[in-house]
Length: 194
Ligand SMILES: [Zn+2]
Image 1 (cartoon, rainbow, N blue to C red):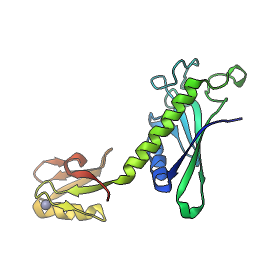
Image 2 (image 1 turned 120 degrees about the vertical axis):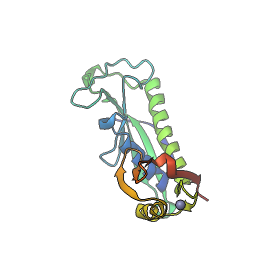
Image 3 (image 1 turned 90 degrees about the horizontal axis):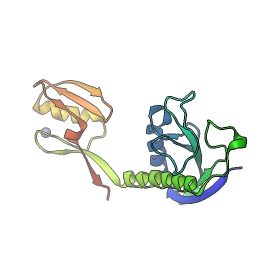
Image 4 (image 1 turned 90 degrees about the vertical axis):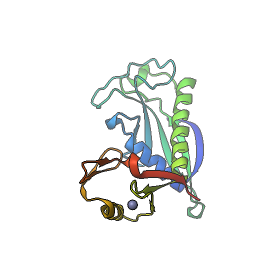
């Protein structure tokens, strides 16, 4: 039986963004989440774990040492309300390295840690919701509201030839004929959406 710890109500948009953050920070990539199913599972690592966590965190078949702690499930309210009810459940089967029989009930520290992870995901999802990215030309300072990234490249091409555009970890990396390189931090700005 899962132990329901807490519930949160968030907007559909904020939840989708929280979900996207969880997917980016997947356990396979060194993160603490896995959301391959509709739910988001929260895992702990040797560096980020509940205080007093008494189980050895091993790698097993995973890419990084991780122990499963809790699951966030979502329930959609009436469609017109556009809110999602999230339930955080801490599982007695948490942890992958001890047999179930040796697992004690979730401790208060485990519940607290899992709740912090839920709140963090929700907060970040809300914050991204109100931030809108826009692109600024580093040559003329124009703000460019693009529909497609190619529009931005076309604009840059007015100033200087673009040699190549490559997808980097943070976004597109643009090589210019001058030998210069434009990174996302050179041309992406964020502002609060009105
Ligand atoms: Zn320009």
